Structures are given as structure tokens and as C-alpha cells.
Length: 414
Image (tube, rainbow, N blue to C red; front, side, top):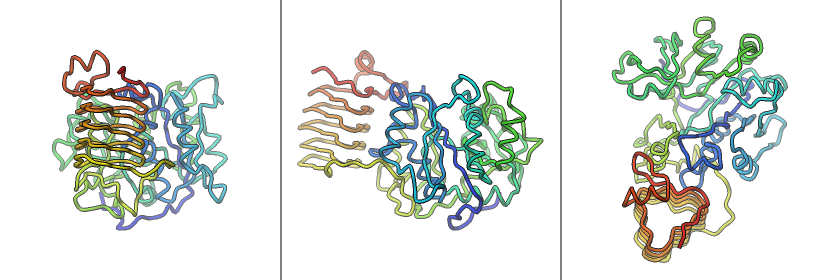
């Protein structure tokens, strides 16, 4: 494929964004026990959905519908409170859309069915291009460059793609594209796959982000799949239309982000669908040369506001950590960890390789290692977590990788 443009390119077409934010996120349980996956906190101050919304807004696309479903109240409240949902013109909006049941009394039954049930929004906005993106990945992307690729390729639909290791092929939709980027084959989550030409040990995976010409999308959902119950873009539509429509694969590795540092992973994208992948992606933003440096003034990830005070550190030993607004640290040791907003850490506490989410209290001489503590928790004095797997499993969730997860809002008994 050809390389992308040197600078961000504003969309030249009327674009409507539809963000699919209704996923259960079952593999992130217990963090998704009371919230949907896109609402899970990330990196001290963000929610996962902040990444896709920031990508659209930074790319100049400000007409956005967010389709919500499972455990959606937390996400709705977060977006209402922290994202400007209306702009200076009628075409600048971020609107949450629960299932309207316009086609019958059923929930969204797949990614394509979610869009099908909301085709009235597409008709009313009358875009040239509809961007259908997922809300549960951590990445930064100038979507204008993908739109330019789509337009120049004369494609009916374009799939954003990225190379992933062959061993992970079973977790993705796998794309087979020719030298010009035209998709000639697509298999959803195959048990076996062949390596990419010229890239042994890797396959070209769909990122779950699509561009459709408006007329093509409406025709498919209204005329060709109106009788289907469960309907998914990756499982049903994309494989079915490979031969009948012109599909293009956009190579995300060619996307050139302004302000990117040379030491960063140039095409950073993570499906944070498991506890271990979520944890590792958080760790990727730490360090002097992080894989993803969020301190990029030319491509900020926008996050929720916080009216509390700045962080206050009285004493202690801190190394390679993120300390968010409102934190209070007194004579504690914090290493390779992320503290969300309003976290209090008391005398003698030790936190290593851990994620502490908003408004938690870590009491005197508590010790945590490789622990994720969800919001509004209190860790009792002298309690040790992450040192004895069997003991931890009696009280909390322990991931196969050994990570301990303390669910949201449960106060540890004194």
C-alpha cells in the first residue's frame, strides 16, 4: 500500500460518525459489572471511550451518535457531564442513542443491526460517508487520512486494518488484500490463517472501524439484510460483499499523527478486551519513553473535568508513576503505578505495578503489587494484595495472569 499523507487532512465529504458503545465487555469483569466496557476508567483520568471520541473531534468530525446498550447509565452520565454534546452549529453534536426499538421490541443484535435500527439518523443527517467505529480500543488516529484513502480508492466501504501476530488471528477479522489495498477476502476469527505476503508471522486484522458510502450502507441494511435477525459487520456483511462491492483496506500503520515522538510505537492500537491487555496498555503510558505518550499537544485525548484540588505529596518514594489531580500521598512508596483522581495513600503504604482508580483510600502500611483497584474502594491498613494468589482469590477476582482486581465500590473490611 502507498504511504499516508504527511499532515492531517480534513474530511472533504460530509461525514456522520456512529460510535458503537454498547458492548458488555464480559472479559473485563468485574470492572464491567456495573458499567459498559467503553466506560471503564483508563490511565488515571480517561475512560476508554475518550480515545475514539477524541480521534473524531481532533480529525474535524463533530457529528457523532454514540449507540449505547448494556449497563449504559454510567457511560451516559459521563458523556453528559464531561463532553460538550452540542456545538455552535446543528452539525456539531455528540448524542447518546439507546435502543429505540423502531423495528420491533428487541435490543441491538450485532454491530450492523445497531446501525440498521438507527437508519433514520442516517437519513436525517444525509451524509456522504458514514464512519462506523468501535468504542473499546485504545489508540490515536487521524481519521481524515482514512477518509482520503477511501475517497481516492473509489471504495464502497473501507476497513481499517493493522498487522497482528499470526497466533492472535483467532481474535480478529482477518483481511486478505491485494497490492493496491483492495480486499479480496475476509474471514471473521478463523481458527487458522496464512501469514501476510512479505510479513511472515503476521496477519492483517480488522480494527473494527469502517467507512461506508451512505447509499451503499443504506442499500445493504435496508434491502439486502432486512430479514436477518443477528447482523454483524465483521461476521456477516463484510465477508458477504467482498465480491459484489469494492472494499478497500486502510493500513493504519501509514497513519501519520502530528506530534508523535520517535520512540513511540508508531501505530499503537490495543484491543483492551481482557484484564491482562487492559493492564498492559495502562503500563504502556508509563516511563520516560512510553509506547504511547499522551503528552502530545497536537493530539490531546480529551477527558472528564475534575473540580478537586491539585495533587499533594507530603513525603515518600515515588518512581515512574502517574499521580492524578486531587491525590494525597503521605510517606508512601509508589512505583510503576497509576493513581486516578482523588486517591489518598497513607503512611507506610507500598504500591507497585498497580492501577488505583478514582477516590480510593490506601490505608497505613497496606501493600499492593499487580493489583487493579476500581473506584471508591478503601484498602485496609496492613492488608497485603498480590502476594498470595490463593488468599487473594478467596476475596477478589484473580486473573489467570495473576492480576488481582478489586471490584468497584466495595470497602475492604477493617
